[in-house]
Image (cartoon, rainbow, N blue to C red; front, side, top):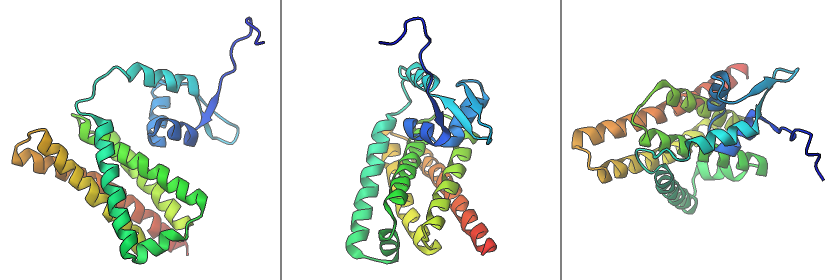
Length: 218
């Protein structure tokens, strides 16, 4: 039996584990730690560790806050569109399908996690009434992580761009649907879609940066 006089053991998570637990990017976790919203410390090797208890309390504290739109529903719509587009791509074959078929299980799992984080970022962006730098920073971080995974797995730039563009089109269609359902004017709807595409551009540019650096090193 646990000793009632002894404090509970605290569980410290890596940035990657904390990111996976909450489905947000590592840069978001870093920002929370820098702002003092969650407790953290650095190991002797300079790696940050985040207190799991604080993360869960942060999520609980914000659970009652109603978003301007249903982010879960936006995510579901986007993911559904992406899956259908990927399925059509597999049936039609192509260089992107062939390149990704060779990924090992670890790379596939990481790609799925990054894809989910990307969709969640998109959903929060669409649902937010403010379009600030925090979204751009998260998009750039996700793009770099996505690019590094692709480069390490030997996926060529053309296949990477083809795959991302398929995802980008799904996000654009979802943004258009959400704008229509919200009853926005034509001008506001176009502006909302353009803002979403701007976020996608940031991700794609970050992916290209990683490939460019890899090419320079080679």
